[in-house]
Image (cartoon, helix red, strand yellow):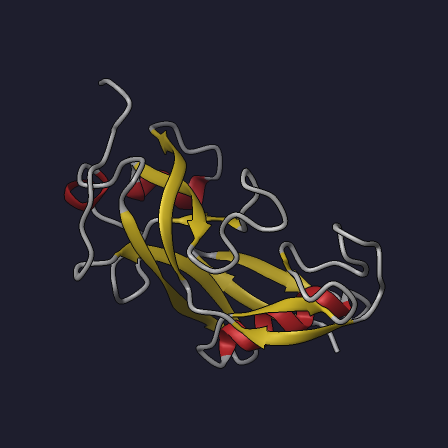
Length: 170
């Protein structure tokens, strides 16, 4: 069954044949973050896919993962390519390095997940929140329900964690 939702006035759809993404976003719709764990090498993987990027084994199980991490990189967008984002400028696209599985299978490896910066309620971040985020900021995942079986995974500032941050010069 194809799953659809609306985010900032745009229709998003995941087709019935896209089994991996359907499963990923259904977990998000349930308010839980899950990733595939390879049944052969036991490493987690992202994005959802049909085979392990580490050992090529095709079998995996969906595993609950804590959605917390550190901003590895970010892009601050000042010109909205999609009209739906125009009223939310500037907004951030984050690359977040998860705490889970950091340094595996090698010291430079980590699970890194892209997503927009949002408020704790799942709305795109205000300019004041955008100005507080930089490389090294601690964030946690939140979900914005956008359809009956679909939620958008987003990142918000983890208020209980702190650490040094670095921002690109203005």
